[in-house]
Length: 541
Ligand SMILES: NC(=O)c1ccc[n+]([C@@H]2O[C@H](COP(=O)([O-])OP(=O)(O)OC[C@H]3O[C@@H](n4cnc5c(N)ncnc54)[C@H](O)[C@@H]3O)[C@@H](O)[C@H]2O)c1
Ligand SMILES: N[C@@H](CCC=O)C(=O)O
Image (tube, rainbow, N blue to C red):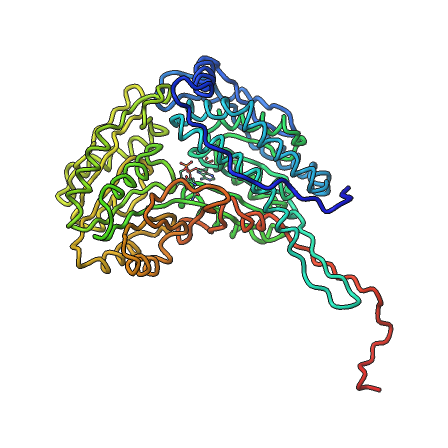
């Protein structure tokens, strides 16, 4: 019961810890990693707050050390998915009517727990099972997740404040109801923070959720569940199931109470889910909300007024951090001929310094790609580039999966702007460069715009403001997150709301009020204080 118009704490970004040698945070994190490496974790599903173990399990193995089993997770049969749906619906009445401050408090508490006692666990599980280095784990699993919780609370109250005008004698108001039914959250392997945010953003707005994490993120998903529980999230609000994504999705999407999909993952999976929802549309009680952030083929475009060292640095960080497994990762570059020799020189120098190996050694900048299927796919494109006359590998090109799924940061130069690796999302540490004639810079912008189906992130480099303006205009639909003189990765909640259009998603901007609005169904209430009792217009006399 609210007895006041409360202000929530002003959201601020969680400072990124440095983990410098000898620092207490580094010692705690590496000790936690070592402990988890030996732990043999048993990850259950979570339905109505109960841990559900089916005995039907799959192993969890570090991508950089895939012969070592660090635990297992339990997978669902159809009946568990139906239980998760029924449980969510049973929890809905209490959760949807509890005051928003109670919901806000839970997620604000989760933010503080994660900033403190859960930080090392969340980061270490992400390093271990998703193969992120210390810095990549910290900016994702700790800071971005904390930011999602804090900023979403603030955005929720900003939304609530948006109220209509009222003419004399009446009071118009809107209430932001949760959707009628339940939300289905499907999350990817690559960002622990996204995995937490997909169910949490819907739950914050009063919805109940069935959450299917990626199999490859199960370890840190368990830490997220523990965090929510300790923060006070009631049983049944977020229910977690693992297993066959097709069976789980078929079951969920067959429910008449399905009211929203919050998806992040690849484009083809999202398109198929959309189609399936369309085919089932006559069965649903309400039109489901569909929010999906999907694939990308993110670009770096440079003009000859740009600084070659800055371009090379943007490629090294933008393409190779987290092994190119960010949806925002740069994977195609367009460089003017007059700058290419310098850019190449800096790129060779920088990539020569990159160390590759287990995240347990913080000096390793590059770790392993997520699983064998991904490794094999990336390796096959590298092999093709070794043969193709249109392509030349100038950096990297080696790979080895004997211990972990390691692929060297690789740079391909292609003389064809439509070469396969200029257009296809590989989701690995591969950058393809197309060198264009300086005077053809306008035509090269057209190539950037038209070479792929995606429009997620992109970066342009120039010191000439006329060029910056022209390129920004020419590429206005080519990226939902557009960067000027900076790499195209590393969006920060509250600063760069994230998402793309075209085949990259519905662009509902994770970490923004726009996203939260999708999880509400507005009820307008008009109350008249002096209710008319005479139907006649004045001119009728
Ligand atoms: N735009 C963004 O914000 C964003 C952010 C992160 C990742 N991504 C994209 O995600 C992809 C990488 O993540 P991934 O490998 O985990 O993606 P993925 O599509 O393989 O899996 C994502 C989720 O969908 C599930 N899934 C897989 N097949 C399914 C099916 N047939 N039906 C229902 N669910 C299914 C998976 O189990 C997982 O939970 C890349 O394409 C990347 O660009 C996009
Ligand atoms: N928001 C992240 C990317 C998330 C997708 O994988 C970034 O901006 O780098």
